[in-house]
Image (cartoon, rainbow, N blue to C red; front, side, top):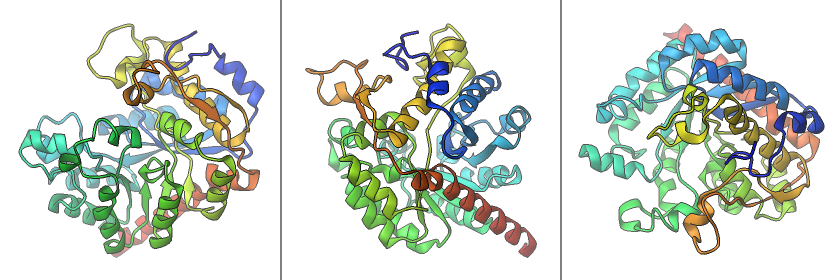
Length: 367
C-alpha cells in the first residue's frame, strides 16, 4: 500500500523475511508507545525486525501498567512531562519533579528533558520565555530529583540543520545551533550521572562536533533516534567516516527509532494533531511502524543505495522549488561491521540498563 511511510510500495512483512534477523536482538532505546491497540501492531513490527525491547516515553502514566500487561518485559518506561496538562507552566516546570517521582515508582530509570529551540515559543505563550531551557531553576530542580533517585537523564537539545535554516532563522529568538549546547555542557559537568543525548546528540550533520562533545564528557551516551533525520543526514556522510565514528565511540552510541504509536493511527478519522494523522488504518499504522525499522536496519547494516520509502517534508521546507512534502531523500547504507552493530544494537543499552538498575537499588537502600 503506497502511503507516506511506504512511497515505494514495499511489502514490509516480506522485506523483514528477506532481511533476516539482525546479528543480535535489538533494543530500541527511544520511542513513544501509546495506545493499547497500537501496541499490538507495534509488536508485530518488532517481532518481524528483531526488536527485542523498546524504551518508551509514554505520555499517559495511566497506560504504563496496561502496556506492561501487553508487552511484558519487552518495554521499559522513561519519565516525561504531561504534555496534555492545560497548566503547561507547571507541567514543564515545578510539577515535573513530582511526575518524575511517579514514573520512578513505576520502575522508570530514565527521565527525559526536552529542550528543543521551539520550546521558546511555549515559554512565551505561558509568560516565561526561559521555561524550557535546561538552565531554568525548575529544570535544575527536576534534574536534581532524577539524580537523587538514581536515574539517567535524557535530553533533546537541538533540532535538524534544516530547521535552523528555516524555522529557527531568527537567531535572536531561538539562538544558534551551537548555543543550544552551552547550558547542556554545564549540566553534564555539574551532574555526574549518566546522560543520553537523543537524536545522535541533536547534530548528526556534524560528526566532528559530536566527537568533541563525547571527548569532553565521559558520562554522555548518544541515541540515534529520529528515523527521517538519521536517514537524510547519515546518508550524506561518507560511509567510511560514519563507520570510523561508530568504531571510535563504540559503547557510547545506542540504537533508537523515535517511533510514535497511537490508537488514533488505527482509525479513518481526521485529527488536528500531526502525529495522530500519520496513519488511518491498521495496515497504514503497521507501515508507519515497520518502515522505521526497515529504513534504520537498511541504513546501519547494509550498503544499499536507493530512495527512502518514507516521505521527508524537511526537503521541501529547505528547497520548495525542487521538492514536495511527500518527497524522500536518498538512503545510503553505511554497513557497520557486525561487532560494532552488536554494541550499537544491544550491548550498550544493556549495560546502561544494568547500571540504572544498580544505581536505583543503591539509592533505595540508602534512603
